[in-house]
Amino acid sequence: MGLSSAFYLILLAAIWGASFLFMRIGAPSLGGVWLIEFRVGFAALFLFIVTVWLKKTVNLRAHWRHYAFVGVMSAALPFVCYGYAAQYLTASLMSVINALTPIFGTAISALYFRHGLPSSKIVGLCLGVIGVAVIVGLDPELLHTDSWFAVLIVMCAPLCYGIVSTYVQTAEKIDPIVNSYGSMLLASLALLPFLFFIPPTAPEDIDLVVILSVLALGVICTGLAFLIFFKLLDDVGMPSTLTVTFLIPVFGVLWGVLFLGEQVGWHTLIGTLLVIAGTIKTTGFSLKAAMKTTS
Image 1 (tube, helix red, strand yellow):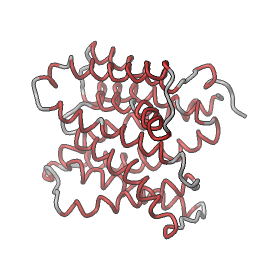
Image 2 (cartoon, one colour):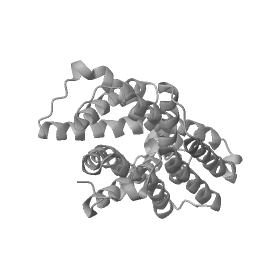
Image 3 (cartoon, helix red, strand yellow):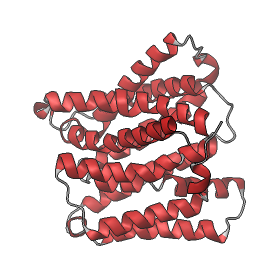
């Protein structure tokens, strides 16, 4: 992996790690649904501009079902799960749970395609589950409050990612930028009706910081992040790009500590290491292979 690709990889991890920070800032006043509607809406607007600038053809009539499924399962539904949980959980915990995505993806793919898992992947699945159990089970605040329910909700997000990652293995191949715009557009439309029934949690608390956080969440953490992600896929391939999965919790925890004053206990560190180790075992990730320069 060249220096430029390594820079984009770290930048992507830092941006996606920051998404949990921005959700923690915006969720208490906007609530999960309004926050995520703004997130996917701003992302769709940004990607629309990029699509027009690059003269891409969306062909919404032919692919709207695909865009709808990907938009709901990869954006609307998991983002709302995070938006809800951000009212109760730390950015650190949410970023660690997000690292379970490859584990869920591997398990769901094995069930769907009906192929067995080698022992190494089974060990990885177990490590991931144990890691989350260590973080949640040994957190005194979660044990003595109702925040444990938010943990169950937020775990639905990597489950959704696992489902959509299995789906795209058999779906028609569509230009990545067009796919991103189409899915974000349909995600915003899917959430729109719920705005009439679910008001913002505390609109009187919306200030400039919240507004800027929502803008950053939509434009940078979603729209721009997708463009960087697809650039990395083109430049270095999936195995190297997969490295971002292990870096996101690092930045998620770092931003939470620096900007929100979150406390990170020993159980969080141990649980995070177990989740990352489980993800590595499940995906068969090789750092040596990832660091090779891709021509």
